[in-house]
Length: 222
Length: 222
DNA sequence: TTTGGTTTTACGGTTTACCGTAACATCCTG
DNA sequence: CAGGATGTTACGGTAAACCGTAAAACCAAA
Image (cartoon, rainbow over all chains, first blue to last red; front, side, top):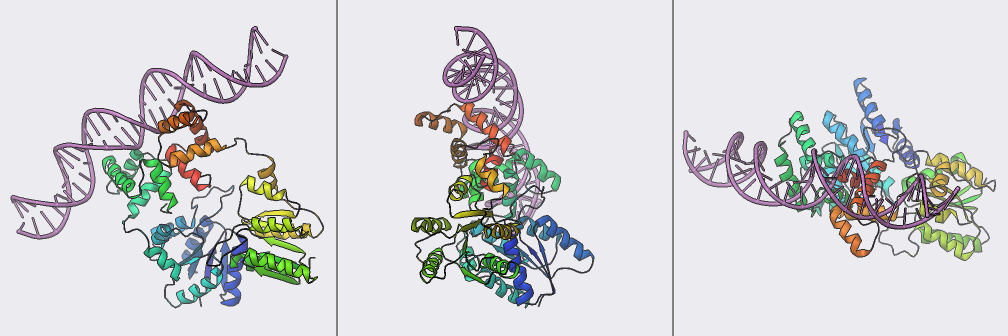
């Protein structure tokens, strides 16, 4: 079994349930529980540098925001940060999120070895997932597979997602263009960004940027 | 302490956390856990007739629906059914639901002696609540009181919500203006709509309409 | 190297959003 | 009624989004 697992979950009731299961039922010697993604990222980074890395990350997706100013506001942000840094830690996502595009985007990531829907048997499913992952397998319940299969065949790349993200964060198309230029992301011209957004508007049936971002949020793309 | 508590919670991870807390920390001898409101109602009714009634009901509000056909689809239905029957069992509601009208409606009910927001310290709060309720008191956290008693400095009216809805549906400010004119909704001028949107941008910390709608979706306003 | 097709970029024009300022209307209070 | 406070509408200028078209750059195969 895993020796050291990090659980990221804001609701203490859920967090206790999960860590209890890991400790009592699966006899994991070290379970670390944190309620913030920022904190989780620091722990992962820290323990990696100290040569005592986590064997597994179990994370929720949506987190309540309180007084604290946060850099990583969701489990998705955390996962993307880990991928960006090239960390090889396996990740099990445990969420109530059922939007298929969101699930598809996440399960496409190599680190994400399992996606568990919080539900009436979520804890049982999570236990099964951990048992499979420790053997080097992935574990995706039937419901997750059907949800992702049914996803639209339009291929929306990470470029499109980042475009929508920047838009939803209040950047103008022009600002995104200059940002992409400085970051060396291509295409970066305003014209190309416009064209790409037009394609997205077509796919997501939106008539302007506002509706585009709204629809993207509705289907869990961002 | 209470002798017999019924916990109604569909997510097993949360349910385990709560019943564990009640049994281990508060030494409640009998904790019954159920995942369906219908089942909960039958148990309450049954044990009352058998002269072994529950001392307390702890219930969630929103429940996932699966294959089972349900008569009571939410915690609210359950509470209202109990009130309708005149059962005197005290009720603690434990939910993520933060909408003030919903909270206000529920906390006005006599049976509802506490409302706990599931959050980072939800379990701790629930423990406090049970300890107060057993003494015959009610327990409403500060946040609940502020949510019900006083509305925020800037009250977001249904007008604002409809404005945001129309925006998210792809209408331009101009189109919304003409729509409001035909519908007789006031204010309807483009200028007023702009002004109202500016206020909303201020409140929701958005720099343009795109971010405004994105943020409104994030906090569940639309 | 040439060719054809795709992607990226450039540009001009129209509409809409954005942001002041100010006039007009309404309501309440002294 | 006068006065102020608030709410609504009007207008003008700048920035950005929107929507064509077309040139330039890129790439793979002939």
